[in-house]
Image 1 (cartoon, protein in one colour):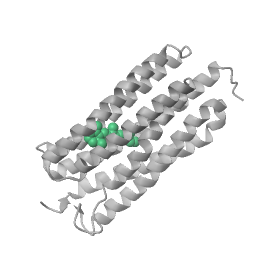
Image 2 (cartoon, protein in one colour):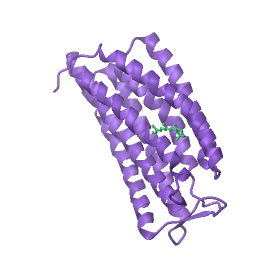
Image 3 (cartoon, protein in one colour):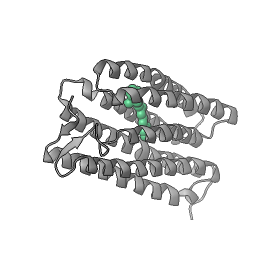
Amino acid sequence: MSNAVALTEGQFNWIYNTLSFGLISMIACTVYTLVSQPRVLPKYRKALVLSSMVTFIAGYHYWRIFNSFHEAAGDGYSITVRGANNAFNEGYRYVDWILTVPLLLVEAIAVLALAKEVASSLTTRLVIASALMIGLGYPGEISMDNNTKILWGVLSTIPFLYILYVLFRELGASLERQPAGVAATVGRLRLLLIGTWGVYPISYMFPLFDIGATDAFVWRQTGYTIADILAKCVFGLTIYKIARMKSAAEGMKDE
Ligand SMILES: *C/C=C(C)/C=C/C=C(C)/C=C/C1=C(C)CCCC1(C)C
């Protein structure tokens, strides 16, 4: 097994720029959701604080991932992926997810402003399931062996499906209780969540396809980064929109 992925100059620049775009998206989104807090009612501010935290944590990790990618290339375009202390560190993504995925789930629950008991039972179940999903995925992510990848991938998919099922049902049930106009946006939030979270297992599987280690690397980094921007930034902005609409429906006036 080779310890390096030989990227072309074009592939190197593509990943370099994609990671850079991911980094600035996270930073810009953090600033926006932070300064927008006074524009929603206090009870919805927790959802915005959570969104700022998610993109802040992800911004930090994108900065680390970006630097790690650059260092792993040395003077050329070939990325060292193991066997050296400057090897590209895929672990940053998993550290990021184990923190941000539970926070994203709590963020979605917070904006719905559900009854306390419903919210806390949902939070417990979803936080446990998300930790299992990420923890079980990691051994497969770093393995070089396809069978090992498949085994951990399948195990990780069990809590993943559970999370999607619970969210689909609970967000669906809450649709009926939302003020007019908000229901459509909550429906879009649900689609965004299911659509973007589905990109992660697909990106995880690229090394299993018969496309060569280099293309699999490029596609996986691209898939994870685009999915992160959608699942964290665009998701956060949708949460903000819902919070604004609900605040207006509950009598908040704009200055
Ligand atoms: C901001 C980061 C987010 C929303 C990350 C989400 C990650 C997943 C939904 C990952 C799922 C995986 C599987 C369902 C199977 C293969 C292993 C994973 C961890 C990539």
